[in-house]
Image 1: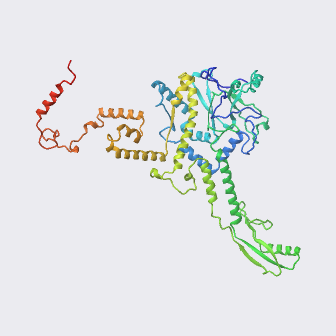
Image 2 (image 1 turned 135 degrees about the vertical axis):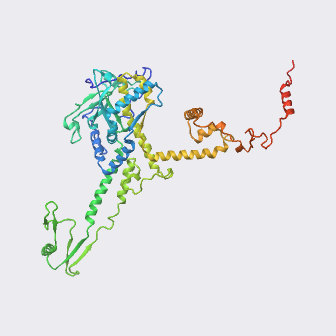
Image 3 (image 1 turned 45 degrees about the vertical axis):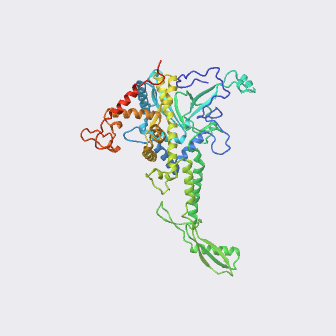
Length: 562
């Protein structure tokens, strides 16, 4: 293979030779593309959905132009990316990262630089929308090859239709031996081919027919190293064809059905809406030819076909044309009821759109958007109690959270390249750190907030109800863990904060807040101390009882003599 364009960062050391597996290496979240006849490869289309990934992405973008699909996409994007005048749409969270303050500071600085290179504050909506529709997103990481330690200089967006990710086996001289090994009965004895991964970019990858090989372009794309391209996929893969799908893929059938139903409804209403007349013309005993001529003469005599031309503003006579909205003229032989004019009524169920609403709801369900958010739905936005919150909204909130988690892989890829190029961390350190780096998106889901507040109120009510039984049937620790659902870290953290606030005098000490009057005891007005017997007269000390107690302490136990 020719030399790849771009740069490459050395990965961590491979597995030891003794660590063997009968399963070849594979990426669960990516598809396996092998070079075939065209730039994007060709598939045997048995289902009639798509032949190449080029056709697939093109169909996704056409679907996004449909009004209902566009409304659903906007709901998802607006829920995931919240634009605020003061706060950034996304920030890095390093609370779970066990690293020094200096490392955390550099991580925040590099992440801020990446956000600035993407112009994410102003273009976050468009970036996220492109990723959701196409099911993939590519950025070329431009660096100065002479000064790579300066990091990423520019992030250039790459159209998904001009880029593909390729995983193929390397060709070598041992191909025949490997073929012989494939006949082995034991899978452990089979020598798996070495897999190489790279990107292929073709700026001219536009074919009207959707067949790259028909344009004679072949595999003339520029091969780029994997590390030089930042990419993020939807995580949905067609295992049968080995191609990456978008979240819009399962809505293809629903969109087509809705379009057909709407078009058929328009045709039905245009044809059945007007009332038309039926003219029964008495032709007597005339022969067939003369009867037809007589019928045409009557039609031309009484028919008025004046048409208003909106383009020119003129009145035009179109008697020579016959349309489906005209009246009916039928001949009637002698012996009938003579010439008669009746009226054919229009459609009686023109106002029923139950089938339209059904397919609209089906489309929204296929896009994981609550049906209550459909434009045709009359139920308004409700900010009541959590009992009034629909289950669909809770599911939708979890779906958006999964999308955010998946989209964060793009930031992880860019941040990894930036840190490794600037020698801030090593590849081994990054493998350990990346698991604890989180990204906080600006949140604006009122339903989730209401749910959390309602749950917290219910827990506080349960704590108040269990208060008389603490120390009798339940421990304080049990109430905090089972009722308040506090974790070990939260318990230790809250105890430290409470003790610090007590020491600072912010809150009073609970041990000093015992009210004697509340315990049913009376207080001595002279000393301010409670009476020992609860009455109004202080008791004299019992000297005999104290002497007995002292003598009992001083007495030697039995068996103590030597």
